[in-house]
Length: 631
Image (cartoon, rainbow, N blue to C red; front, side, top):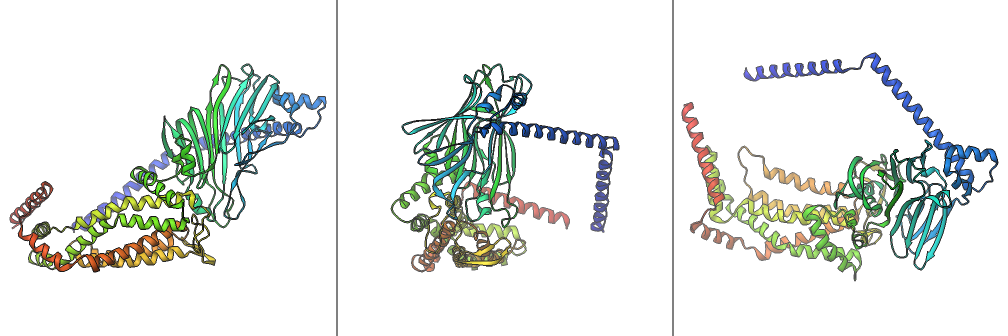
């Protein structure tokens, strides 16, 4: 009757809550007048944006006439002066569409319209389809400074014509892009490209513009980039494509693969990371504020095949004595830990080795070890050797874990007898079980702790292999690229969560995981008795034995084959270690004899064990007292 009453009360409560919410929505609904005002405001905003766009387009069209070298008549000059004001001088004297510069690492193009890097090709790399790696090309990027002038104009440098000049001094090439008011008054972008260096020095400075730039109008730097796809699987590449940044005097963070829109303080660099390649803007003095955003451009991998994400950053610039003076750098290059770490500017944080302990293990153990092995052997063999070394190092942990399972298996008949004896007194059964396990030197926790020791290594390597630049386009056996999935068959259809191809390394890894879990969970299922009122652990382990390999098969079909190779070899070695321990090291008769000896010795309880025993005893006394009161 009470349950029925409770159900009726619950229904009434839900109805009341729904009614209150409906009333609140009705009360907060906008009036017809408010709706009309909102629509009017939206329409005004659309019209304002349209006018601004038309104005920018007219400036761009006017400026483009001069960039192409056309002669001006007097009417055109008047129109240009009306559009650009003092900066019409630059348009009149502009002659080139683009400036081409090369180094041993770069092939660069500078656009006269906007003065920015309009094309960046990395000479040493190609993508999955042997096409050269372009970080910037075909208007996928823009760099703009928005500022006001004292004659009430709002200008954008991306629409204005810059005048280029190139000079070379040994290994250093300087490219100057100037937006001129006169020969002695200008806004300059100065690029310095060094041979053998992915870092491009970049300075923005103005000269003689203190009376032209309006200091009361905000000056904003906008940098946008649509990341090109470089890998075989665009969805997999997108998991490692995001924005990284350094802020507040050396802290670092990242947005992750999700869409993001964040406001930051005191930012010293912003990096658009595209899995294995990065575009980074660094500044000598921090931007006081920065708004960054990232938007995923891949909704359907079969349709969205060109771009991964759209990145954007907006930072305010400050005038110094009425002039702009910013000292910065561009990094365009590989997301290679060794290359990034050599600059000593915290750029190695672009490589997602993991946080805390996991990152420490990758940086100071696995990265040096893998670099050493890869220095004199093929990278596929290096993965195998590294896996063997890691498993040997952790073999004592597996021994401890298997020994604990063996002890629990031997004690199972006695534990079953205790549970049967005290089947009507669960608290007493637990006390006696703990006492027996303590005397015998066997505990379920002793089997869990070694497994926990392996987790940091497991997770660190899960982070390491997808981030190892050295694996990119390195082949091994049937895998063409250890940084991407291997393919033994292409399917004529797409399977959700699996893909349209069959990878062999995940299949091998799944089979190895199944047999490994069969060995370990089989032992556990025999050792772990069923507790009354508790979930059936044996049944759960049995489900996991089948579920884990299937999950591995689906999850890793699109992952790097180097990671699947590691899991295959790792589980294969684990199976071998367990068989050796079981058949040649552990002797159940000796373990049983040792348990009996341990049971005879007085076992000193730890403070924790004493406290637990006292708490259980108090709980049992309270339970008995309650039962007496009821009787």
